[in-house]
Image 1 (cartoon, helix red, strand yellow):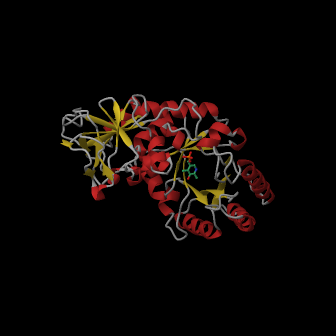
Image 2: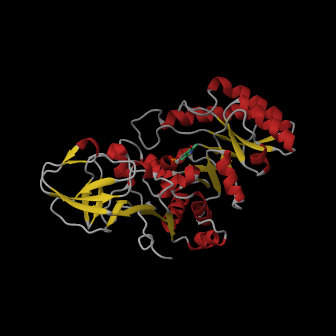
Length: 390
Ligand SMILES: *Cc1c(COP(=O)(O)O)cnc(C)c1O
């Protein structure tokens, strides 16, 4: 394979599948329950299919996605592992997902009725995971709706129209002990919801609550399945902790223009930056459309010739400028925008801090314009090449 630079490329993202395999194995070893790998949003920007092959090889047994479209993409690629999807419209057509054996997260009676109706139409039992709101106040049935949802689900299950395979909830502040809602409060609410499920005559095989942070720090939340996202991709989910995860994503580009400017020159839109002395400016062809956050203007940095160079002025849609001060640069010099940090390049966590967001947003923001190249993960990559999916 010729390199992206030989092909005249502007930037590429490499995804280290061996790192993802390592992280999967590490999480599986820490968890007291099987691992559901969250591969929504194109596997947090890493590529859903290569990541899926890798995590299944490395010990994950379930897959989690937000939407049915994502779940069906997995099935169309031949993935037969159990898949749970959890974000649906109340009037969605669930037929294809039910026929494809996709498990469905359910937070309301309206969704439950619709799923039962679709299951009846296609003549198959739908497998559902009833979701309770234990304090996040986002998805999930709240306590007043929970009993009704359970009773109705039990009735539909008795009539063979669906199977309640799971009861689950989502944590709001695992890994941030000072923040709300506290994990302990959510666990107590979850226990109550589970007792109510038993009282309604349900005996779900899978109870699940933990995300990445809770998988690493809160064993009491593991139950029968842990749902891990960000940690699979090598980002430490608990600030300040360092637990052997390996970041998988590297975003690199190269200079496409180099110029010398005098001291005091304004740089980029609106001149929000001024050179402090005579400076070499390097133009790098990645911008906010590629996932470099605009909020990191005048804050971020990238590695060029072994040193971090500050982002000068506003990040534009397609490009940004680095100030090299008195140093020189050549056309085509490599620029490491984001990576594991091994050579001093900024990490997703650092970009997140500069942009006042979380690493999830940084990674999922890496744009579709940036080609992905896969390293390692021999089996996963070979299979995908055979299917011409990479
Ligand atoms: C995205 C998501 C996860 C993964 O969370 P991380 O913090 O990235 O591990 C788990 N469960 C649900 C319901 C999610 O939406």
